Length: 481
Image (cartoon, rainbow, N blue to C red; front, top):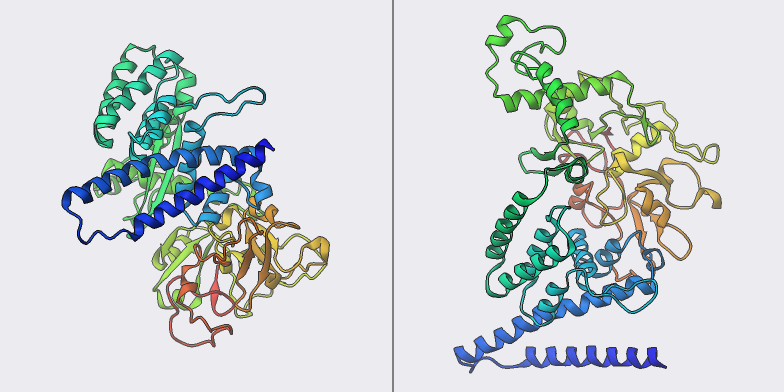
């Protein structure tokens, strides 16, 4: 009875909130003075700052009452991203803040205070904005491991006190200064602290094709790359401007004298050379049934015209000139969708696991995980039986298969996600009822060129002599990988 009463109370409160919002939206401001409009904006700002506190408690409670798998997703981030059509980063932010600002529910006993109690109280009273909350949790996370609980709590209180009277940037600057002063009083960094801070982050590829990387290397990692750079980033080594770059032995004096690259450029070229040597060694094993190598998908027309782009199994876009140059350094896989290969693509029931030739074809067709919203590239995907599971009589034929990352592959189950193949050979994903809001069924993140196809073009386009759009359309016509 108690639970039912609480549920009714929550429903009534939400209904009253919606009614109040309707009243505010229906209000006529045409005759309002500047002071009245300002007062309205002040109240709306305060209410908007307070509402996330209710969402935090709701998310915390939902995670107690259900699991992502019961909701039909692989994790809570996907539950929010799919149901509310928000980005993965926004879903991650909401879950992180709910974990820090909502009361914590122990296994037994009454609820515990939030992990950031001062911030939670300030938000509940509308004293800080979501931008403030984001800055506060970031600076608190930067506190060194040697800081005790009392100092940590006092630090949070001071940052919140600053946030109540200042903007997000001023709050961050004041907190960073306090962090700097705290760090001077702490002990020398130890191995555990260094290990906690290690990381290598790959940024998104920019419009010019460049990709930013950021690294915090441990002393061991720094020592390893110091030795490698001392050899391969020396003047004259691995210079792409040379007709025959020196990658072993000693460069000639002419190669050294003609090397006008900066140290940063030499280290970049050394990284490429060392990676290429590792790929060519054959000692890297296999990844999802294929040797570790670079797999690029593009169209035959783009190769012949030396125009357009290719896309790797990890999602990196390459100019065709780079694709051709890379092909001169190693043996890469080639799969032409015009019956030029003799590889068998239809295995029917003779095998459950897709062959290497089938995987290459799927990489060229799908580019990555086919579930809408999933950004996992082809290198991290498994082959999924789309039209029918193998145990239910499914065939291991290329037109019945699609790429799916391991968590999404496991999400296809009775009562969960279902997959079908449409006439265009696009894999369509239908969510379970808890997540189905009529959202898109096809993932075009890895193959944006599919968005250029006419909506009624369900039949494969006839072959023509004109170069196709950059990156190439979906197979089977003229595509290679």
